Length: 307
Image (cartoon, rainbow, N blue to C red; front, side, top):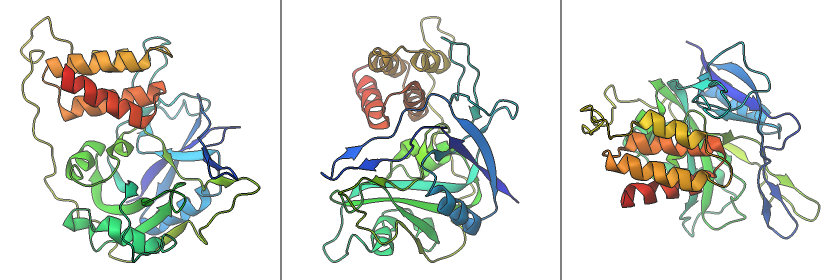
């Protein structure tokens, strides 16, 4: 059965990092609106073919979420929830997928493996994953920092035996050294190769390779996080604040107030028995509002700890 992957195109914007002659990096352009396209894929081979095309498209990236409304796909914001400030409706929705992207950042690199050996570096990363991933075919993609920064910086793509939600992946890979924010439905997954300015050069002969193996990761039939414990909100206490309201509050926070709004919301979530699901939703809302992923995750952790 054919699956889809949502491709975002930001017209006139660069969705690729820039490497300067000094070795410093320039981050991605901010893109307020994008065009959405659902591209059909039916396995790891067609996924690899798509990634090959997107590697040269500096204005494109992908997300895990599916298109919410096929009539609204041009010049739209990347929203998983309604923006209470502007009234803009969601353009993406949660959807289980049979493809997965796994981000490894600054993984320790053994001395005996060269940075240019992408399959070798990938094998180091794969060894940190649950057993079901060990014998599977992976598409290996070097991210911008690989070779140019210490450690292993890779994104591994694979095919799953059944459609799997982002929440399931977060739970399944909770002990693996991967960036779990990438499993959010609206979280951008960059696919373009970095841009090397005059005076700089790409140290890699290729930025993409393949680790051979079986066609799909066998996903356990029962892969669910434990049920969150009952909160005061579940018992109908009028003093509690439900997570949906907190998410909308964070998503609508104004520039300059997003971090403090996120911290406040995380503290309130903690007071109501803050769960992993609540943390993930708040992080996702903050990223959609414009906060960097790492900053959003750190703020949520701090708020849950002190709330």
